[in-house]
Length: 435
Image (cartoon, rainbow, N blue to C red):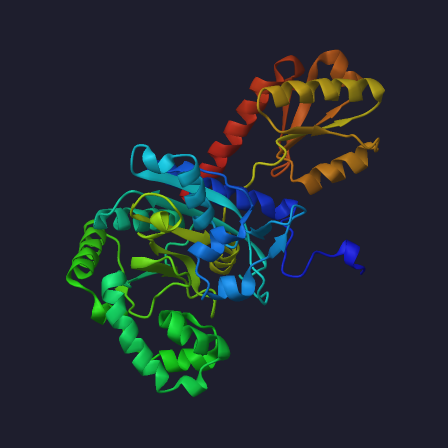
C-alpha cells in the first residue's frame, strides 16, 4: 500500500464503529467535571516553543527527545502541544483568568503529539482528558481533583484502577533531597545513560523517571523524596491523605512516583491498571505551585491531572466493559418507486426534526438490497413504503430484533415511533430484571 493510503506511523484513525464509544467516554468525562465546577477550555494545538521548554523542563524526555518543533513561515519556533497544562496556563495568564474569581477550574479534551516509539497505548498522536485548578492551595483541593479522576474512571467502568500517591516536596526540601540523590547516583554514574549523566548535575530527580532499564534498576534503590519533606510539605501531604480518607477513596503511598515533567511539586498521583502490562498508568497528575509565576503570572498554587484516552479504551476493552449503544438508525424506510421515495424523504425529514434518527435509500437500490442495508445499519425498526401504503396512510413497522410488526399511521409517525421505542425499551428492561 502506498503512503498516500496509509496513516503516518504512530497515528490512528478512529472509525465510525469506534467513534460512538469515544463520544460516550468523552461525554462522561466532561459531565463529571461539570459536577465539580470545571468548565471546558479549548486551547491551540500549537504554541510558541518556549511555552513548553520553559514549563515542562529542558531536562525532560518530552523536551529533549519528543517534541514536534518547527519554524513557521515567519521564522518563529512553534511546537505541537505534547501536553495541555502549559498551554492552559498560558491562556489563563493571557486572558486574565488568574486575576478573576479563584479558583479557576477548567477541563479539556483533545489531541497531543510526542515523537516516541509507538506501542500499545502510546502513540505519537494521542488524546487526553484533563483538568486544571488554579488558585487553591489547601490539601482538600488535591483530594477533590483526585476524587474527580476517581469518579470519571468509575463512570466509564474502570472501577478497579488503583490510586498511588506521593509528595515530591517543594524547593526548600527538594534541595536536601537533590544532594542525597547526587551522592547516590555519582557512585554509579558510569552505568547511567548519556541523558541521565547530563541530568545528574542539572536535575537528578529526572533520573528516577528514565525509561532505560539500566537506569531504572539503579534508581530502584535511590533515596525516597518522601523521607526529605519539610514540615510544611509533610503537613500538606498528611492533609491530602486525611481528605481522601474522608471521601472514602482508597490509596497507596508509592514513594517512587515523581511524574515526568519538571513543573510538579508536592502532591503527585497516578491511577494504574493491571490491564495494560508495562504501560499501567491511565491517569497522572499533581501540584505545580510554581508554574504560574514561572510563566509570567502571579504567585498562585495550581494542580491538575490528565488521562490518556487511548489507554482508557484499551482498559475498557480488556475488562469487557459494555458501553451503551450509540443509538444508530431508529427507523429505516424502504421505498418502492419514485412516489414512495419522495414520501419516504418527507417522513424522514419530519422524524429528524423531531429528534429521531431516520434513513431511507439514496442509492436507487431494489427492495431486497434496501432491507439488507437496513440490517447492516443495525436499524431498530424498518418500514416498507409503496403505493398501497401511501394511499391508505398506513404502514407496517417491523421490529428488526424480534420480527414483530405493528401498523402505524404515517401522519402521526413521530408519536407512533416513540411508542414503539418505549415499548421495546420496557420489554428489554423486563427481560433483564427477570434474568
